[in-house]
Length: 343
Image (cartoon, rainbow, N blue to C red):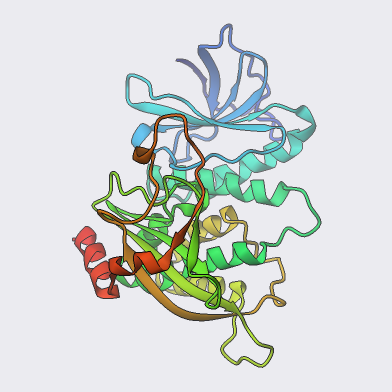
């Protein structure tokens, strides 16, 4: 892919950064100009061969955001294949001009949010998190709140973050390890130690739902743990009841006090998970019960891609916790594996 770059000019329209950018002669050329010479990362306004407007982040392949890319109406989110120099591009492309105003505001939001990123990796993560934020803000429906099941799932992840990761890694590395909201198959990736979080009703059948063949695939991991916590609807008079907002706010306040620069990333992950501070969850009150960690190792009862022939995908199944009991491990074992990553 050939790059044709123009310098940022004083005559560029403040309301339309694509002014003066002509489409390239062929699809293998990108006609682009840098967003701002003072911005620490390689962001470009660009035009495609079909005259569409783009915002592009050019970065090392290793710094590109990991995880599923969101889908937005009228806007295409894409990542290119690595080039021979070890770089790639992450791009937003306006496919429907009716959404041009929204597209422009999204681009400005990303540019501003990434301007304070401390590393290229963090810039890529912020790019993705902000795009997910807009995905959830723009999705249809009169009630955009998380369902009860979605709330339980997110609370389970927040418990892992608050109770098990932040005490070991600190807010910055713990939040960076939380990759589930942006589409990664595991909820947490701490180096080569991964954790998948599940929440279930205490009185329900002793099962948890596994949503893909990759969730409990330990390939590529030195250790994979399944965290299961009991979470039930609270009685009206329960003094220890809490909402999902209470949990999120408690973690946000801790991060703001200990590592304020991480707040943006944490809130971006919340939004990517579908949570908004503006939504009222006061009618959903919860009580937490016991939790357990299960070591997903040899002979653990799970379905992985290696268990079936190529062509079988999107496997969903229920996992019996009774049959997983022999694989239960103490919290100290999990903490020890995580501490070994930190060293």
